[in-house]
Image (tube, one colour):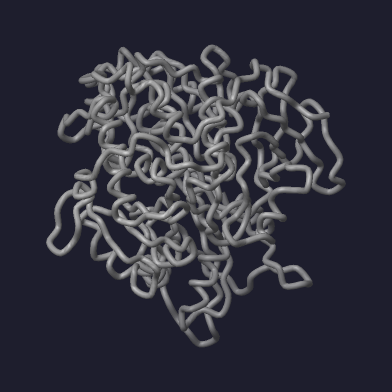
Length: 519
């Protein structure tokens, strides 16, 4: 059977992303759209719209062409939102870059996406300047000031752009990078139609309102922060308090200072809210709803946190390729262990991985999703697109789960090999390839091991070359110098051989079983 949403269908506006997102800005001109959490600096909806239109005019004046790609590598701040929507209004495409990437990882994304401009902050200029070498990037702008670089504020002197540069709703507007269901990071083509549809679907599920306010510490470069916090928050007319990085006491203090009503978090933050003694020192009385996403959250932890704070702690589910939400939990519909119900205008199949037959209620199989939020495909990667989206438009998530009689989805396992560390995707193949460049390593395998705080941690199994010697710390340090911090090997075990199939494929299941037996 095919499952549909238990919630009413929503109307999907035929508008490009930024005009849709800014639709309430005129009426809410005096209301705070963004507050910088560190300084208290406020940007009202009127100021935000004016800045977006001025910067968009500046992009056009600088020669930005329709469909040209602009990379943004910055922490959460009001100016991130301005740049994001200014580029979109000017007909450009955003590729959002993880600021913790090494220069080599940034370079890969810049080259693969074809980005021609890069927006960053002064603190990241060393990485940025190294990354743009031999790329198509011809200009670097900074949020703030730095000698020798144009300030993004210089674009605001242009005449404001009154109307959206004409685009087709199926034109790509955002190109975030994701490992998808397997493999190395690929550009995910998300269109105006995808993002507008998913904002409406999300609002039709979680009912965010104009009187809501919340912290945005989940990064805007990640699809969760970009869409669920920044874009959905702006469309709803909420107030978004930005944090550049997570600090528990600052996070808690902002809730008391601004009477924040919602929290969008990842499991490590739920652990802190449930267990850290400092939480009792702060006023969280206005908080009525917490959504945890990006990685699995145990039902026990959700209940513990909810009881401590006196509010609902629920889950959602999705992926970059789904813009990102396919499931979320409406207020009052919490069910322990559930990642929520199917969002409106979305279909779900639960499919037997072996026979490809459709399964019914309470039967475990691979989760397939079809709806207007399904990506256009992977950038310049037709084979990966065909491996993820079938001819009937079903996106194969690579996750194993079931839907119960009430329409709640439960994720129970992962068919795909990706590791989810604190909500970030880590491809085992990438780590394995790097480990094999170490002169003392003969073979290696990487799997994800369960971890209450991180969701999963990357764990490596290493075979040393005959006669060679090395410590786990030596090898972990070798990897740490070459990749972003979230991809680093958190546990390393030396073994005599890596279990493999007759065709030479690593048997990760065997390694996971061994790890379970060893506790």
